Every structure is written in C-alpha cells, then in structure tokens.
Image 1 (cartoon, rainbow, N blue to C red):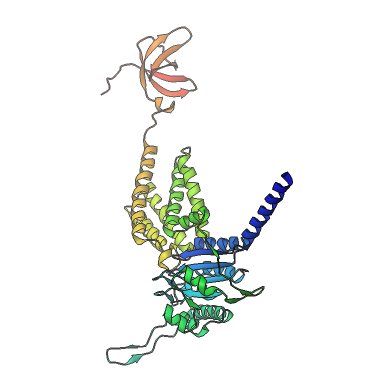
Image 2: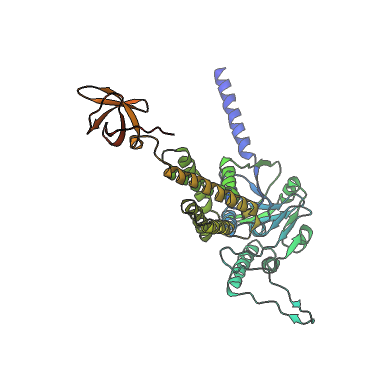
Length: 452
C-alpha cells in the first residue's frame, strides 16, 4: 500500500512538472512615456528575465513621444540580441511610437499597431551643440513673391541625419520592412497612422487588443539568430512584467527636476555643515543627496558648463553675504545660477528639461536664503564673546574674601582667585586686566563709578 501511494505521488509530480513545462508564456513589457535610463533599465532587465524564464514571446506595448538616443540604442541592442521573439505593439488606441519609438518598433521582430495610433517624427535632436539639427525648412516666399530656397544643412546636421537614417534603414532591411519610408521619417519627420502603416509595409498587423494580436501571431514564422521559429499562441499565458523597486527608484531620481533638487540640497547641506561644523544632519543629508544627484547626472544628458555656472552662482551669492557689494555679486550669482540651471539638461526634449518656474523659484529662494543665513553667520562672528574666559577682561567686581593665602572675587556666580599689585581688602572694587590660567590679574579701582 505504501509503495502504491509513493508511485502515485511520483506520477502526479512528474505530470505536474510536464504540464508546467508545456505551458507557454508571453511576457508583456509596457513602455510608456519618455524613453530614458529608467525605461531602458526596466525593459532590458525584463527582456533578460523573460529569456531566463524561457518565455515563448515578448510583447513590448509602446506609447512614447520619444526619448534619449543612448537609452534607445541600449534597448535596441537588447532586442537584436534576444533569443526570444519580440513583438512591438503600439497600443492602446490613441497611443504613438514617435521619434525613438519608431526605431524601437522597427527593431522588433514583429511590428503591430492598434487602430487610431501613429508612428514617425524620427528626426534626431542633437544635444550638446549650439546648432541643433532641425527638420529641413521648406521654400518660402518674400513680400515680392520671390521664392527663397531652403537653407542647406550644415556639416553637423548632415552628419547626425545621415547617421540616424542609416541606422533605421539597417533595422528596416533586417526586418524586411519599408526602408524608404523609414528614411523619410528621419529626414522629413514623416508620420503614418496605423492603417497606412500597414498598407505601406511598415508594420505587420493591426490588432485592437492583446488577444487579437496573439491570435494573429499564431503560426507566424520569425527568423531568429538560432534559426526560423514558428510562433504558437494557442493556450498561451500572458505574464505582465511590472516595474520593481529599482525601476521605480531610477524613474524618480532620473527625473530632471528631482535630480536638480537633489543637487541643490546636497550643495546647501554641505555648505551649512562646513560653515558650522558639528551639525551633522545637514552634512549627512547633503552628502547623500549629492551622491544621488551625481548618480542621476551620469546617466542623464547634462551640460558640465551649466553645472559649473550653478556652482559659480552659488559661490557669488555666498560672497555677497560675506563681502556686500551693493548687489553686484548677488545679482551676478543669481544670473549665473538661472542660466546654468536652464543649460543643465543638455537636450531639447521637453520630458528631460527642468521646468522654468522651478528654476526661477529656486534661484530667488536660494539667493534670499544664502544671503540671510550667511549674513547671520557673519554678524554672529562679529558679536562680542559672551562665553569662556576671554569675555571676563574688563569686568568689574568686589573683593569677597581676603585671607593670608588668597584673595577671591565673584564674577558671574563663580569665585575667582585674583592677583593685584595693590593691597586689597573685602569690599574693594577691582577691574580684570587679563586671565592667567585660573587666576585673574586685576587692578584696584580707587573710585567705583556707577554703571548705567
């Protein structure tokens, strides 16, 4: 009987393991909002986990206005190196795969869109140069009706546009999709709605939802690095890959406004700690915030010129507190601070720029706070000493006790031994000349003048 139960148990376990092995999974990774370091980290690690879990399929649900080029290229590299088919799906209705999203969609093994969605506007926006590549301008007419030809792009614009066009053309040819329109999307910022994208061979399917997409994918042959793979979506289980704490943390600190605030908190915390050593809390908080800001800045497109201007502005505002210049240093510091803050995020992408109201509010608050606090510190250093032995010099008191060994006076509630060139008796008034260790060197006051 025991043997029979053991055999039944082993059989059930083997059947369970077999059934689990046969269950196929499709991982759903959602890319929503501007593409940046946090998005790339979330997508790449999700794709790696899907491969570790031996997923049958990965679906990238895309709704993005674009994003940073380095993050986009890291995501495309992960897609091209994947041994699991990746399906790009622009969804839900009303979503878009603009700019960097267009490149991602072309990189996927299968491209699909929901109705009422669009893709395109893939013209790159360069960061870090005064002359930014722009969409080629059309011919214009002057007041007399003469046609003025569009200006020729300069060498830098040509270089950036050619690089982007070649990149997306390579992706289009790899996936056997319309490469001519892809180049047009880069050079002319062309856009397509989903129906026209299907007609022109830019995408493979139009699907209203995930269920319809999976149904259309069933039986499709996809060329992978390991060979041709036939997709089977019958009875496939959908696994939604949600962002973990790491992705959430990165999305918070890589927000330009949050990174900007962390930078300022770090700087101010260290300034307050150095100006008044021993406070500890400002120094600890400042160091932590500054390290978090530096971590965020290393993966964000920042301008070191802007960062330098921010530091210069803060130094000038501090100098105004220590050496008043009738506002010259302070005004220069505020201007440098504002210009540096505007230049800090070295990109024209709206999602990665610091809000101007925040810049002006922080600049005004910083100027007022630094001038007020540093002014208080300077004034406190100029006040007379009110503690320790040094402040006793010049103080007056009466002799309280005279013995053969010592003469004592009382100052601020304490008895002090005194030394005087003149003879003293109880009741005599003395003035402190200096402090010699624990003994006061005094002089006798012949006539005590009443103090007001």
